[in-house]
Amino acid sequence: MAEEKASPQEKNGKKKKLFLIGGIALVAIILIGIIAYLLLNKGDDTQVTDKNVPVPQVNATNLGPMVDLQDFVVNIISDEENHYVKTAITLEVSNSSASEEVGMRMPQMRDTIILIFGNKDYRELQDLQGKKQLKAEISSRINAILQTGQVVAVYFTAFVVQ
Image (tube, rainbow, N blue to C red; front, top):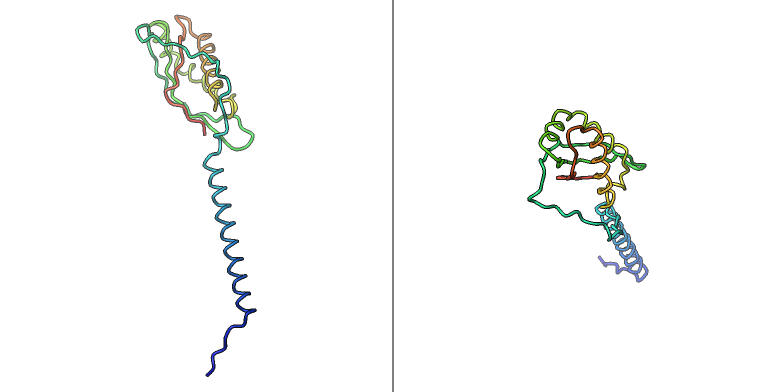
């Protein structure tokens, strides 16, 4: 029983197959890594470019009454996928009678805020400037409703855009 030795052509063929399989595996691993990176960093491409945005100074001794609104979960405008915002809002009002009025008009306040969020674009809500504009819009729209006082400040105590 004589054992046959592999010819040089068979050795070269096996090496080529090994390199081919290794190359395909390497390309697959690189592609999986790129896809995972892109999926994990999706939506993180926004940058704050306006460095001259004034930060409001809050004096803790002069804070007005605070009114916590219930959590909001609202669908927002997007061309690509379905997106929503989940947020918790606290209003600082000018006096206690305004605080009571907000409590009595809570359904009207919530409806106004839901409509404001529903008209916002996904990209608007991701940067700092968009959030500041949103606060200003909420404040002005609620002040138009209130009769016994006004909203001094709007605070987002939670804010998630997905």
